[in-house]
Length: 368
Image (cartoon, rainbow, N blue to C red; front, side, top):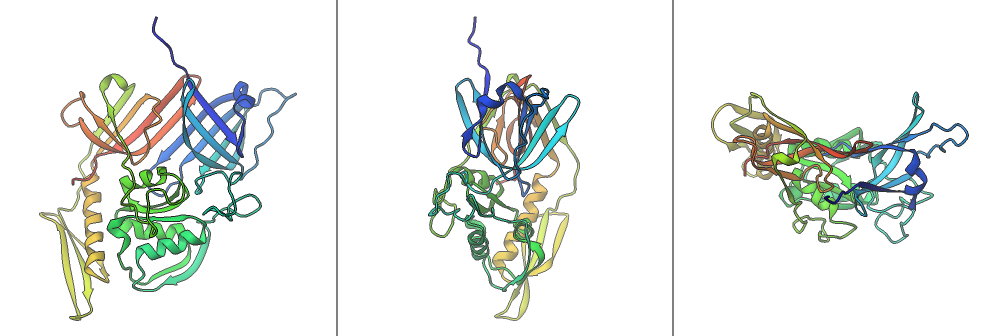
């Protein structure tokens, strides 16, 4: 008879282990891990069937730290802050929803000299979604903007090499949150602006998870917040026998063969053009950029988004904690057209009475 392994989890609430306390009420746990600006989410469902011993409502703002795995080996999945508690019946249940915390460690463990000081108990968490009105001067680099916003929210800046030195035109932030303005700029350069692991990330899509996973302040980044030393996420090999179900979709979408961007040469007082890619169709960007570097980055961003369109993959397979959004999987043994590397855009980890499973969505990575 072969050895059997059982799914396992651990949950700490405000740094206190509550796993045993909720074990007999546990119904399900789901972690939704997605690329882009959307916050990662935790949904915890507990049975509330005993009126003589009802579950106490967890407070909004409480921190939940979660580990998943098998038997006695569990991996940390993240730190989350409760933002919604829902009663459901029948059957009587409590559903707790939480968003990924921007800080790396629980504020219960936070010390006064940590980079996230000011986010601890008795103080407000960083309000990256709060609206502001201000202007960023023309010539402000992406590195400087991210560093300023990160400092305001008690986070460490982590800016990718490829965009760090880009000078921006004047940016007007009018009734717009810091995350909204960063996201607006990130979309122009095919990057991700996202808080995670105690850092404010502004990096290439596949790099953000690696930087956040690198740990606390200062890990794998130099004093300027650069990310050149960040470790790469592992590529996970997937074969047909590992997959419970799957679907690959090919769709016809018009993507540009060549992208043209314009920039203003102030020395010669003329507008110049740069191109990315070759062939038809041609797409011209309407914005005039302040320099050649900014125009080139924007054109390449539009081109690479087009290269990724048209191919998507969905898989369901037994739970694997190493699967995470912006990581990669490598399919082999399926068929021509499906085999190869895929970039994960969304991963759901679900633990319930049926066991531990992962549902993933992926797209073809851009051409190198």
